[in-house]
Each structure stands twice: as C-alpha cells, then as structure tokens.
Image (cartoon, rainbow, N blue to C red; front, side):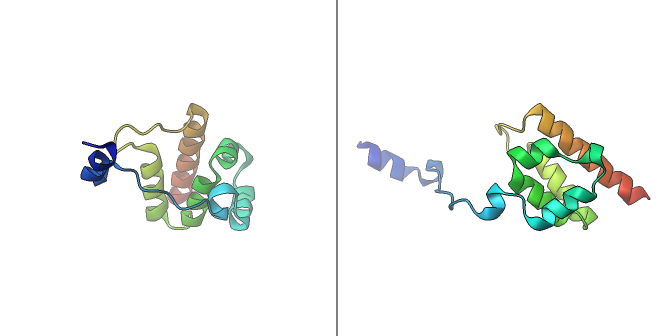
Length: 108
C-alpha cells in the first residue's frame, strides 16, 4: 500500500496544521504588561513571560474571574491527556506561586 494511502486511511493520526502565530501568541499584550506590574515583585512570573507569553496573556485575561483562572491553572499544571512535554521546572514554580497568590487574594 502506498504511504499516501496508508496515511489517509488513518486521518485521526495525521496532525492538523496550526494557524500562523498571532501577536497574542508571541508577545505580551499591553493589558498583560499592566497586570504584571500590579503583581508583587516576588510573584511576577518573568520566565513565563519570556518563554510563554501566550500563556501569561491567557492568565491575565482570566485573572478577575476566580473560577476561570482556577480552571486555567488546572489546565496548565495537570496533564490530563498524557504524554505532554510540560513546562520547565522554573516555569512550573512560577505558575504555582502565581496560583497560590491568586488563592490568597480570594481569601481576603
């Protein structure tokens, strides 16, 4: 069987092309920068901002909604699909620190 037919016989195994990178995928948005400056210095996820600006944009966008931001943190920190590469340990630490800070804000 030709390779092209074998691949088409298994469409679920063929990766779908991703859309081109958007500005929000590659840079911190102005609202995210403003939100970041409002965080206490020790809670600012600078490695995350540098390595994964799209993730920080997502967190900043959801920050005001406790339920939504909790779901975002769960999605980022818990591997439910298996086999994900995951974040570098320093980035995971920043995510956990930021999640803990958000929980402290909810208590007060």
